[in-house]
Image 1 (cartoon, rainbow, N blue to C red):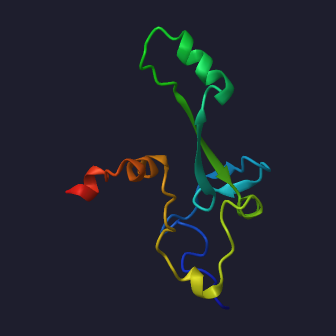
Image 2 (image 1 turned 90 degrees about the vertical axis):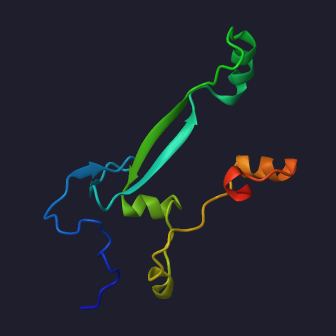
Image 3 (image 1 turned 30 degrees about the vertical axis):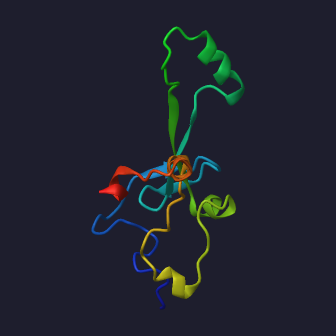
Length: 121
């Protein structure tokens, strides 16, 4: 029988069985090592109220905390929501992580003409 993936779609490696977690979208039971895990980071306060809070705040440099929510999806929901994508047979062999999105910090540094500390040294 042909093998589709080197790890059979799991990261178990020597463990006989792993704990079952529930998909956050459809509530399907998925092995913990097979589930697609992503952190969903967002502000506790919606963007419309951020300015009002900053003006009413006594502390000038108060940073509004964020919500860090770990989302766990089954394969079906992750593909349907485009969290992961189907790759061709040749591209499945590529084990390097995909290139990261360049965030706001690097764009701001590029506009000011300064590079991050790691690139300067």
